[in-house]
Amino acid sequence: MIEPQRDPAASSCDAVVVGAGFAGLYLLYKLRGLGLSVRVYEQGGDVGGTWYWNRYPGARCDVESMQYSYSFSEELQQEWEWSERYAPQPEILKYANHVADRFDLHRDIQLNTRVESAAFHKDENRWSVTTSGGKVVSASYLILATGCLSNARTPDFAGLDRFRGATYHTGHWPHADVDFAGQRVGVIGTGSSAIQSIPVIADQASHLFVFQRTPNFSVPAHNASLTPEITQQWKADYAEKRRRAREESRNGILMVIPEKGALDDAEEARRREYEAGWNRGGISFMASYNNLLIDNSANETACEFVRSKIAEIVHDPAVAALLQPRDHPIGSKRICVDTDYYRTFNRPNVTLVDVRSGPIEEILPNGLRAGGIDYELDSIVFATGFDAMTGSVAKIDIRGRDGVSLNHKWAEGPRTYLGLMSAGFPNMFIITGPGSPSVLSNMIVSIEQHVDWIGDCLVHMRQHGLGCIEATRTAEDDWVKQVNNVASGTLYPQASSWYMGANIPGKPRIFMPYIGGVGVYRQICSDVAAKGYAGFVMTGRAGAATSLAAE
Ligand code: NAP
Image 1 (spheres, rainbow, N blue to C red):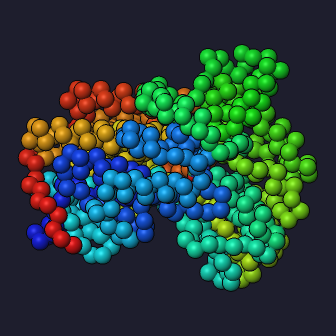
Image 2 (image 1 turned 180 degrees about the horizontal axis):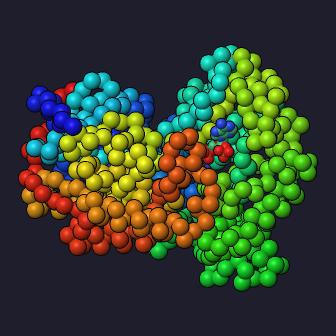
Image 3 (image 1 turned 45 degrees about the vertical axis):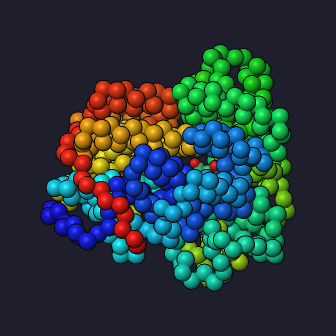
């Protein structure tokens, strides 16, 4: 393939960052602090990434607020006040804006602008980046901060364009208020987004039909206001708590995991343990025992406990049976965290429709047909998920060394070294990319680790007068093997999940995130750096970066 020519008139900077979510914001802060000129392009109309798009009713984070926040600035973490145990979407978006204002980030962020393509020029060690406005920017480094769950996916239902009512996707929710009062609403899907929005939509709609193909395990959030005492407990010891979450936890979230497995306890004691987890609320339910994600028999005890809770809460035994997951180990798909999800099915205005036994056949002008039955609807909400981890990267036409396309290279599944770089794509970094803990962790912990590592790496290159870094094929092959090996020792590959690419027809089935834990992963990355960036080749002279020309 022929390498495209660089436009000599293109404006220049040291780094182009794609995306102004939590990763892009911290990257800008970090790299600017290192003296680099940075340009951030964001397709949305504001900063915040996930929290800009996912503004569906009931949207909130399932990681507790005191932990789902930046740790890089002591002043920031001391001054910001979270209102609830689990922050609602508007508050997280406000936080993202506060960070952008506080650190004067807006001036280097261009909103409403997609990066359409990027090509590497090996003679200059620089990327040419083309935006949706037709602008071409030249940069030494291209950093993809595009998010793991940012490419919302609506299945290709027949008749979709004929529907006369309104359609919504949870991951692409309108910015104007949506009022379902008096409407017959259909929600398609029962993942985390659906499970959060269903109770809220049921409160508004005259009737809600929930179209479920696969039930998911959900545990109660027990959300509540954050008292000053709790907030103070965190803030008094924030640095140490953050350190422990970063270095000692599996998923970047502080939680106590007992040193025993589920089968070490007799039935009654086990039930008490699960009951305590259920009453505590949130994803720490999976920390009730230390072997729930590696031992099928142990896992089944937790599955059975949650199924028994569903049977207790849901009055109609047939509906309860449909809501009880039986096709995957609990936690092998992201466990959902809800407020009143199961109870919602006791409402007279809510109907659960099993589209496993009777699939959705087509969308009709006034509703949809599933299993031969027509459901009249005024609005349809697609809570049908994302082309996860690779979807947003794939939308950019990225050409690496010798014009090779990243989509071509990843056709059989993503290949990276440490989830940070892909061989053949020099000077291109991915934040929380496939092959790193990313979606299995507290995203902000993983984002900060990647950004800090990249910052150190770029400083190292500057100090040594180097202009080009690239992962070696050998290091990449070894890492891909390691990621697969660690995953195969767990129950995760047993589920048809978006972690495996299983929700996208035709997507290769590969377990994409690194499951070894954030502490272990951080150590691996630090060791690589300490060994002179083992597995990477650093060459070339630094390309002369000029300051960004006025746009
Ligand atoms: P998801 O987990 O992928 O769920 C998509 C749902 O749509 C599934 O129930 C799926 O059924 C259904 N679906 C897809 N195509 C369908 C079809 N053709 N017919 C019928 N049903 C269909 O997506 P999500 O709920 O948006 O969640 C994605 C991830 O985002 C979560 O796992 C979580 O990591 C994150 N998230 C986090 C929060 C939070 O922090 N609280 C909230 C929301 C999302 P099948 O299972 O049968 O495919």
